[in-house]
Every structure is written in structure tokens, then in C-alpha cells.
Image (cartoon, rainbow, N blue to C red; front, side, top):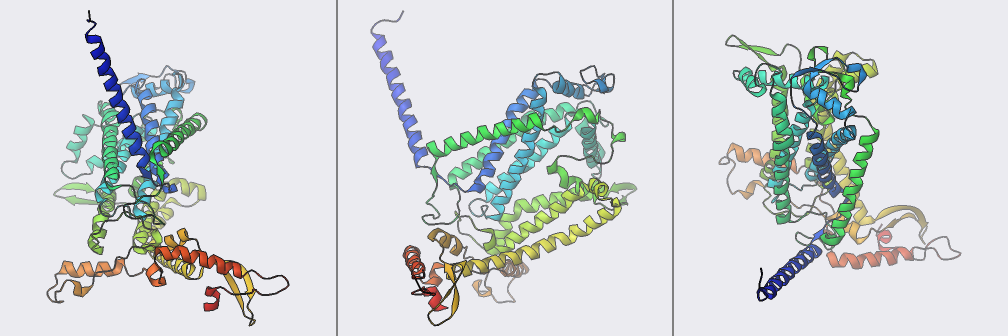
Length: 565
């Protein structure tokens, strides 16, 4: 029994603990209130990816209770009449039971699949937003590598989950995986035997893939996402240039409670949207595909969209790509496309470091860059998208040939030509478009936006009235990265003393900055940021002076921009 003397001490300790918790809560609220978060619409891609991943985790946890990862052959005795008595693996049987006999099982399956597709869409868009706005520059190169790691782990998670039902499409993907392993010289067969636990298809492959899909890969994605979040807190979020925005001052909404409340509401809306699609739109109807049998795989078999470029790379390999080495046959039909895709992903991962080496830019960047203000980088991104786009289109070449009534071989030949010329055309066109947009921005800053209103000046000249842009628009249009190509005299060495690497770096730097027009800057306009605000007021007064007086056919006075014309 507790004595009466110790009761007051216990109450005091509890009150002190409550006070400390209240103080801690107040500190968190104060920190969140002072923490500004940018509100640009492109930041929603990251939120969509995060909340789609949450839906994936919740629906996947539900599916785990009813799925059996076994290759044991059984006869189907479930509710789907067309397959009764058909031999299939226990994995497919459990997936069919989950679809037809478990309450809410089909909804969870389809919501899980739709959430995975939406997660990959949002993740890819987030990667593109980071690339085209230069958000990977110093000090965020590590964050870019982590982001690519999340993308690769997500690809592996999607592949392992795609194979688990063991239906016709899953078996075809498993067969391609086995062929890829066996295409590796010397160790290919042993590696396939080790992964599958025996000859294809093995008896333990589904249990191993389930462990990867349910436990290891999701934990890897969560860990990488936590590292990226920590780096984001360390370096602060990036934002587009504008009034009051600098490398360290962030303009946006407070994290607590405004941004957190909006984000929570958006999560519930997105979750409801995924469940709505899962309940109304059929996806991956495994009961129509039947059990796995690679010998019966027909035309039109398509993987999920984010694997289309890998499937297309396999289809574009010309026939007969085999070489004989030391009495053994090495098949390049699988090895070559996988090598090309691997090198492409490696180049994407290393791009921030390559751009930093070319531009010799060692300064820290905390403001995003408009894609048009860096035409070469934007053109490189467009070329990469063109390369992946051709591979992705080739992945559905059989479907396109049937829909367009074309010969499959002719369509594949056209894709092979586009795979070489497409990135070159995309690079050239994109860089010229960016340069044209820069010229347009420069004209808008100096002369204002066209209004379509024509006035006659006192001396009889007809001119178009230009509306001056706002301070925010002007700030956005004149902001740019002043980086310049390496100058030969900067190193202090003579031409003969420069190494091949130095010469290559200077040529690459000149090429990178070759097609870039510096926008009209505040210094070129002869005004600082404060003068820009005063100039905006002056321009508005001048624009008001252009209003015609009653009974006259021309304005009383012309603006300074019109008088300069």
C-alpha cells in the first residue's frame, strides 16, 4: 500500500511530466509555425507519390493475410466456374479466392494495383521536375542519387509484385527473368539455378519474391525516403525565384497547421480516389489469363506501363544476335538491351556530377531554375525522354501493328530508326524552342505584354499598347543562373600544357552554354529589386495616361516605352 506521504510526490512528478510534454508540444508547434513550405503546384507530385505508397502499404498488408506463395500444383475448386478443375499453382488459387471469395478482396487487389501505377506516375513526374528545374545541383547531388535509388527499388518492387499471382502474364515475366539470368556469360546458368532454387520455374521462387516484395524492398524504399527527407530538412526546400525569395529565405505556407492540414486532406481525397477506381475499373483480370503456361502466351501481352521501356528494348534487338566464344553461344538478344538500359540508368544517376564537372559550378543553389533558361540541360532531358519513349512504344509494337493494320517487322524497323534519330531530333528542337522562349521573355521584360490595343499618337503614328508586367512576373523573367563557360585563360596554362581532359572539359563547357541567351537582368535595366517595384507603379501610371480622353481619337500622353519606340 502506498503511504500518504508519497502520494503528493507522485502527483507532482505527473504534473511535471505533463508540463514538460506541453512544453515539448508548444516547441513543436512553434517550430512548425515558423517553418515555411513552398506552395508551387509541381511539389504535389512528391505528395501523390508518398500517399500512394501509404495506400500500397495498407492494401498490401491486407492481401498478405490471404496469399499463399507456393508453386504446388492443385486443382481449382473456387467460385469462378470457367476454371473449376483446372490445374494451377496454389499461389494462383489463393489469388482467385482472394478475388471472388474474400469480402472486399477484389477491391483491395485492384486498389493495390492502381495505387502502384499512380505511385510510379507521381514518382517519375517528381524525378522529371527535379531534373528540369535543376533541383539536383549542389548541395543536393546526394538527394538525387537517393531519389534514383527509390525509383529503382520501386521498379524492383513492381516487378516482384507483378509475378506473384503466377497467372499467364506473371509466368511470362518470370520466363524473361530466367532468360536474362541465363544470358549472362559463364555464370548465367548457375545464377538462374541459385535464384530459382532449381531448374525453371523452381519451387521456392515465389516465396523468395514474396519476401522481397513484402518486406525487404518496402523497407528499402522507406529507408531511402527517410534519408531524402533528412537531406531536405538539412538543405531546406527549393523554390522558384520571386520577390522576397533568396537562397535562405523561403516564401510559402507555415508547415503547422496550414500546410499539414491541407496535406492531410489531400491524402484522404487521394485515398478515396484510388478506392473509387479500384471499385469501378477492372485491372489485371487474372481469371481471364489463366494459369501460367509460357507456351500459350499470345500476342498483346503487356506489362505494367513503367516496364514498357524494358520490354521494348528486348523487342528491338535484331534477330540472330548471337556470338560463339570458346565453343559456347552467348546470346545478345537479352544481354545487349539490358546493358543499354543499365548504362542509361547509370548515366541518369551520374548526370548531376557530370554537369557540375562541365560547368565548373561549385556554388550552392537553393532556387529552382526555369527549364527554358538552361536549354542544353532541357534538351538533354528531352532526348532522354525521346529515347525512353521509343522503347516504351516498341513494347506495344504488336498491339499497334494490329490496331493500325501494319506489318510488325516494318513497325519494328521504324522504331529502330527512331531509337537513333529520335533523341537527336528531340535535342535539337527542344534547345531551339528554349532559345525562342528566352527571346520572348526578354522582349516582355523590356516592352511589356501585348494587349492587342492600337492607339494613334498625336503625330499620327499607330502603336500597340503594351501592358507592363507585375513585379513578380518581372522578377521571374529576369532571374537566371549567371554561370558561364570555362575560359581558356582561366587555368593559366598554355594550350600545349593542357591535358586532353582539360581540353575536353572546355569544349564540353562551351557546348553546354552555347545556345543560351541571358535574359534582361535588373542590372541591365539599370534598376535594383527595390526600383522594380517603383518602376511598376510608374508604368501603371503611364498606362493609365494612355486612356483616351472623351471626344478624342488618340491618347493624351504616351508611355515612356511608347515614346522610346
